[in-house]
Length: 190
Image (cartoon, rainbow, N blue to C red; front, top):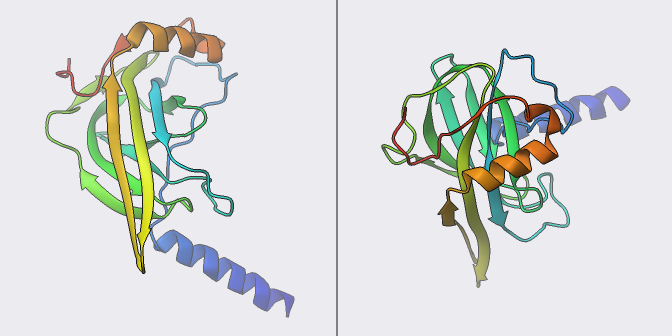
């Protein structure tokens, strides 16, 4: 009986993965020590969305999927509590590929290609941290009778490179020694 339950649990997990759960790239820990072999992407990625009491992902969200010539794809997740995010990537040339929209369980509800020109063929070198911008979004759900409407939208975008970089160096003190560069999404690639 126990092995049947275990197999059923594994089957449910596999079905969940196939159903389209988002694979957001985890942020680094506050005590990460750079080796000089990796690149970092950072910024504020905030979403105003209600917390879900019973869910896997705590709240609906969205993310920026970034595809790189190395073959890797990284997805920055918008958070409603700790929007200052830093992810580690392999040095490469990357482009913003799509926007991903998820429910409170992390299930992808929609994908949209990124508009052309937002971040195309940006080079990210080892030993550097790159600021992508400060993004403030909103996620809402409304029910009309038996119809449920879910919407995501970016409300504001700011280039606050100086302040966000200073905050990043306080929260992630080991990154304070590496050079940073403003690579705001939407600016021409360098």
